[in-house]
Amino acid sequence: MCARRFLFVIFWLTLFVVAGAFAIFQYGGSALTRIATPKGHFTSPPPRSGPDYALGSSWLARPGNSDTPAAWVPDGVVTTTADSPAATFYVHPTTYLERDRWNAALDPGGDAGFRARLFVQSQASAFNAQSEIWAPRYRQAAFGAFLLNSEDATKALDLAYRDVLAAFDVFLAAQPATTPIIIAGHSQGALHVSRLLIERRAALKGRLVAAYVVGWPLSVSADLPATGLSPCNAPDQAACVLSWQSFAEPANASLVLDSWVGSKAASGIVRKREDMLCTNPISGARDSAAAPGANLGTLVPNGDWASATLAVGQVGARCENGFLLIDGAVPALGPYVLPGNNYHVYDYALFWGSIRADVERRLQAFRG
Image (cartoon, rainbow, N blue to C red):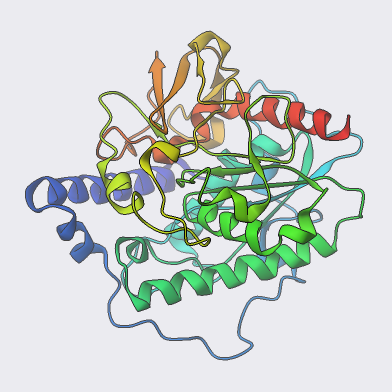
């Protein structure tokens, strides 16, 4: 990853975020919708044109693939893979920010492809000491699909999910029956993972260590019952779900709340503000607080994520009203902080070291 290319991506995203923030300030969310909505209508791809997940090229990371970004660790971290590793299925967030189509190509190339690898590197790598990592390429829905409640947007998200589901079935078929399973995703990836937990509930029974559904709101009473899973209430609990959304203070989460509160889950139950799941990734417990000194490491890019280092004991966090509020000496992570002090892009990076320890703890509980 050359520094020049990385700086170009930084510039592009900064421009996008600043323009979006200004539009919201001046005209409200409708302005952001107008500037981000894909052109035209969703068009279904030809039959049987989906990805072939038997091919290594359909995966960003998979055992046997060379040059996998999921194998990365920050400078100074020494790692050895567990003797009997688990298997992690990880789905990356939205990286396609163009407006020319509703779904990205399987391998979008350019900046979208670069960002996808970057997220696998900085997020899925947290699981690489305890598990083999499988991260599919998929025809992700474009950013604008999340701003609309329309038939086009629904079809775009459904297409992306069908790819994720097909990849998961190939992943699961490749695992020995005794291999523990970990599922992780972020943002759009977390949305697809939350649906996967419902539709593959039977296949995962007795095999799931934990599901990290990060950067996407979940209701404890409306969303989780359909998965058959409990929230992770304690750090030594297995077969449970973790979820958090990171904000600094003063936090303004109205963009999340306005679209989520009152919406219906797949169960038909209405989601309520007071029922949003918040897991503290530092403590591993639901609705808890942790001081900065307990955080085992925040990824700090140092100008380039390829040479990121781990800053230990700098960022604390506490769950409050369903959101995760960060505090302490938060290092400079880059220009991706979204309006409302939303640290969505850094949901994993802020707690990389603690997530790594959380995985090991839950895997021990699962086996023990």
